[in-house]
Length: 165
Image (tube, rainbow, N blue to C red; front, side, top):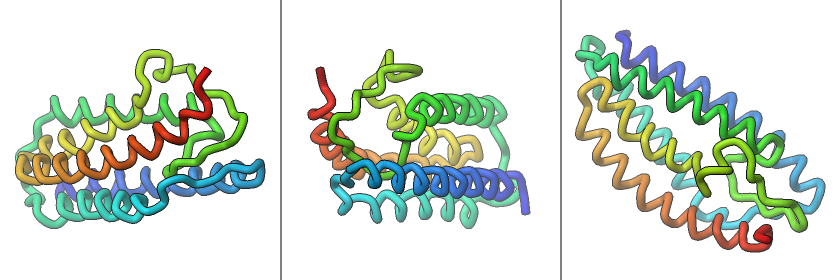
């Protein structure tokens, strides 16, 4: 196993921890009347991310040349990811949850961007495989991610409409 595979395993472990945290938050939000919106896109999102990591793991050679600059940028993106998760607190989930009467979060990166987490995901999808010279994976999954993300953004904007003001 080379560095690309090791990094993919670390990212997979990180994502698993995030899913566990998200599920706990989902249960809390459902208990206070939260409703999932747009559940139809969620399996595609999970499949996309699993296939993205799986393709890096399987296709990138263990001895692939590494761009330390891009790998460092990916680490910076993880700091941004953590900032978004912490800023949303118990509202952060991997699903789109609408909680009637809940205020819109406007702290952390949400002071500056409407959807900072999605910007981070767009960059992650491209940067991680590119760090290992896998430009085809970066391009293909960026296109697929754009399609799923556009769907998700429409769903999320509808859910957030009730929190505006």
